Amino acid sequence: MQRVHRLYTVVVFVILASLDNVAAGLVPPLYSPISSDLHVPEAAIAAVTATGFLVSAVVAVGWAYAGDHFNRRWLLMAGTTIWAAGTFGTAQAQNYGAFFAGQLVAAVGLGAVGSVGFSVVSDLISPRRRGLIMSLFGLSQGVGTLAGTLMGGVLGAEDWRRPFTLLAVIGLGATAAYLPTASIRRGQSEPALKEVFEAGGEYDYRISRADLPKIARHRTNIWLVLQGVTAQLTFGSLVWLPRLLQAKAEAQGYPQDTAIVIGTIFATIFQLGGALSIIGGLVGDRLQRRTPRGRALVAAVGVLAGIPFYVILFFLPLQVDIAEDAGAGGVTASVLRSLVTEPLMGLAAVMALIALALSSANSPNWFALIADVNLPEHRGTVYSVGNLANGVGRAAGNSLVGVVFSALSRGLPPPWNYATGLALFQVFFLPTGVMYWLASKTSPRDIADVDQVLHERAEARATAS
Figure 1 (cartoon, rainbow, N blue to C red):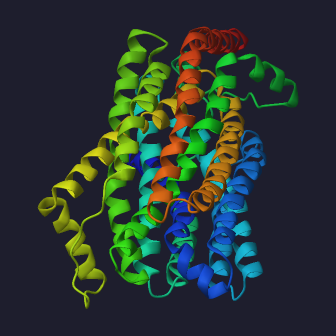
Figure 2 (figure 1 turned 120 degrees about the horizontal axis):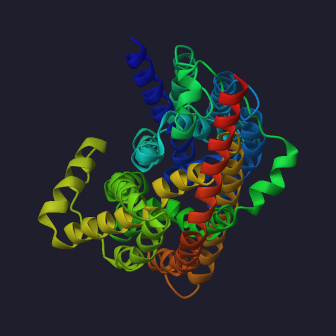
């Protein structure tokens, strides 16, 4: 029974961690209909998305610090209820101001899910399998983005409010799902603390402000935080991929509602390569057992190697044949058929698979490294600071690429302005790879420091008892 309870807890935290990305993925496929309904430019809707990323990342620091002090289950339930309320408010918005407010309320709640949830998951898994489970944690977020993109583009093509209402209902159900989860003790997965927990003891250390300078002295933390800014400048730009594919469909003469579905389905299919982050996590685990530089090296190689495949993907033409009277089901069937009947579409799918498989090695190894180089009571806070850097980069990438698209459109008509802009933003993956390589140089020392402190605390506990 205890094993089942533990498995349920893992499943709940991994699956529900995806919901914040579902919420984030709803809006981009619907930029056109939302902007038209609210009588504002598409760039104004994109600005809401960018601001939401930033707000969520900022408040996550506070949520995480609280999570490193208090009961994490109740904090997650509170955060989930808040973002569900904000999502429902978004669906009811009748003007731009109300839409903006609903998204910001949702962002405040979403800040709890990733940061506090990461702290819990890191305490569930031993370092030996950390990359694999963190790949599932990261994959759930990627699946959430796919689900959000699909939910927004398909359910919202005729009525953009519908998917927001549905997600709000799901959020309320998620709040209830937290109640039966097991209570996860801090540090319970650490081998150095095994005897402490077997003897009925607890790891009762909690973060304090005096710990912050110590955290900053771990040089690996610096590289892991800073790489998030440059990496997310690129990843933030990629939320426009459905818009690029929509523009390619519109260039072929398809109406906007059909083009939105085409772009959404293709973008969803292309992003399935993110599921291969599991391979990145497994490779990171295996290489980490050979050298403490392993995880960072895997992330560095993956990020850099994916660049050319993304660029090819952006410029490949879209070829699909759809009947004028086809509904959403007919459009979906035609898109899927084109992957087999149209060589260029099959090639595009292969390029997307390889690009996302390589760049997705970043996520599980980043999660695992943060857990490896930090004490249990510091992990949620460090994750949230890294997530803040990610949010800054993602918000900047999401908004700045829109400005680049607009500037390029003076000389390049759609879809080529979108393709060129997205290709230009790949340049930010270069410093990301370099910083992972630098993290591979500092992580062995930082991992050894954490292991030493945990052993000393375990010995002190054994002596005291």
